Image (cartoon, rainbow, N blue to C red; front, side, top):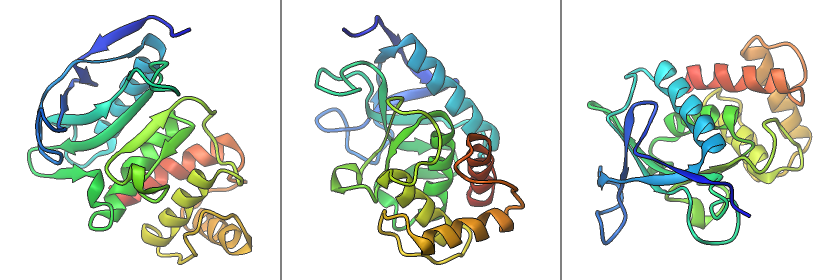
Length: 212
């Protein structure tokens, strides 16, 4: 049974828009749109985007475009506990998720903030269905899990493209990725094991600061 849904038209004071056909073309600012999710999930979204605005060089964005939050389909979208981020627009910069290959560092910096607030984040590398949006939901706890392909892909991409520690980006945790993480923690001056939630959160914070 779905918890009661509430409507929202902004996230941390940035208006939410929809930019998918036939309403508007993907990659544009689209049109203002009312989304729905559970109250608890909205609190997480608000906290997440407030943090993003606090660390982003240009501050609060002018527009956030989304492919949807609550959607009548199976899974966490159908529970009102998921959100798909298409793009973010500042006055002097556009961030469009489909441009991962052109804007990799910035993309990973934004993803790092999302991962501080949501256990499940599916990105461009996860599969072709997620090339045009970042999916986040609260189906799992925040933290690094070696057997989680989505988390391992993110870490491999982050240490490679943000910290310049090349590792294979294959979603498989092995000795090379382990060494890359150890070197990354040393570079970021973080003590501890990335499997500890506090270390994971600090890794994400310092990574986002380096990438954004």
